[in-house]
Structure formats: C-alpha cells, structure tokens
Image (cartoon, rainbow, N blue to C red):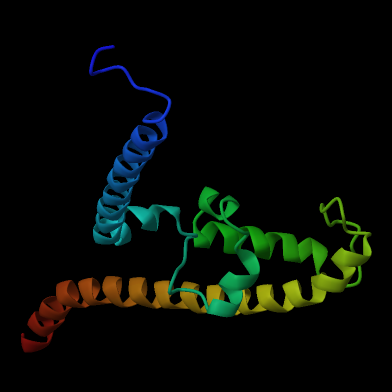
Length: 159
C-alpha cells in the first residue's frame, strides 16, 4: 500500500480536515464579501430601493407606492400621477368608472377610503408643486423681460 492510499480509519479524519479548511475559506470569503457590500452599499443597492421624492409627503408616497419590486417600474411622480388618475374613478360613491377588477370585494371597499385620503394628500402636494413650477418659470421669464425692457424704458424716460 502506498502512502497516498487512505485506510478506512483515516478517511473521517481527512474528511474533517478538508471540511474544516473549506469552512474557513467560506468564512473568509463571506467576511470579505460583506465588507465589500458594506463599502459600496449606498451606491449600488440604492438601485434596488423603491423610488422616493421630496416633492411629495411621506403619507402620499406610502399610499401610492406599490411594494417592492413592483415599485421599481416607475418613478414616484409616475406612481402619484397614476394614483390621482385612478382616484378620479375609484374614490367616491360611484365606482362605475373604476377599472379595478376587485372593486366590488369587501377588502377593496374596506381600504378604498384610506387610499382616497392618501391620494388627496398627493393631489395637494401636486398642486403645490405645479404652483412652484409656474412661479419659478414666471419669475425666470419675468427677470429676462425686465433685464431687456428696463434699459429701453430708462432710455425712453431720460430723453
């Protein structure tokens, strides 16, 4: 028998030694992997978070954002627009225009009021956002007009 041959008495010891070595290697790899993930977590794991926006209240976003991973399909603005659109058909007493296939179920009817109240906050947030954009554009355009017309007016009055 050569020195490479393993007897039945030695095989459990060799197996235990190989398993122990493999376990140590796996632990080292796991620690290195977790250290790497921790160092870049904010960069690449952020792609897997549901979208959010400072333009809308947390109450609004909580109501209109579907669970992960469905939430990744659209931006916060798109989810808000979709919710406002559906609320126009599904909120209130008349559900005839509501496209939800479960609109007649008890679960839907129990939760729709909470949903509608949340979407109402989204509508208010959206109105404020639109007003801010209009104001920004007005003052941006207004300052351009004033910068052009002010010298002309000044010139006209000085004559």
